[in-house]
View 1 (tube, rainbow, N blue to C red):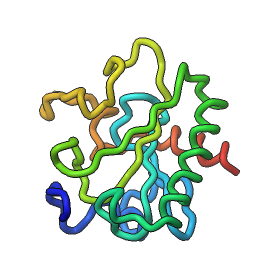
View 2 (cartoon, rainbow, N blue to C red):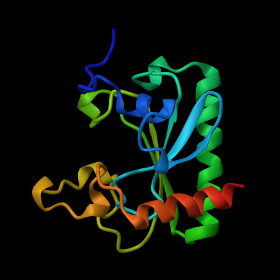
View 3 (cartoon, rainbow, N blue to C red):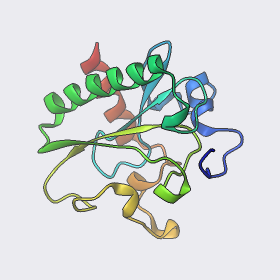
Amino acid sequence: MSLPLPPGNPCYFCEIGSGSTAQWSVIERSELAFMMLNGRQFEVGQCIVAPTRHAPTLLDLSTDEISAVMWLAQRVAAAMVELYRPDGILLYQNNGVGSGQEVPHFHLHVVPRREGSDWGLGPPHLARFDSRNRPQKFDHTSTTSEKMATAEDLRQKLL
């Protein structure tokens, strides 16, 4: 039995993973997974780690893909601690539309948390903004110089 998934054909994360779009946001790749800056910067440095292969949910990942995703998540979390000195690191992941999954491709959010953030103590997907008045830092479709600089800072830290 599979979980109900959000629409997404073609899969946006597959396009990023294959190198066909939004390459400014990709911070690091391995054979099985890639890490990118989240286009919605609820917290500066917020990243997403996803398998390269299309796998809709956690239930669809191989053991090797799980390891690759967690390895990249650990690497970027360490970089975030050095770069941003957060109060904590939040990892969260949604499976199926009932959990708030918005892209039909497994992805793990890695978020440096700070006191006084824009979305309190919960995950940022709970912070809903009117799309007509959404600030650019929260709009995943908006590429800004600040987002590109953040992605480059993380890339350099991981070298």
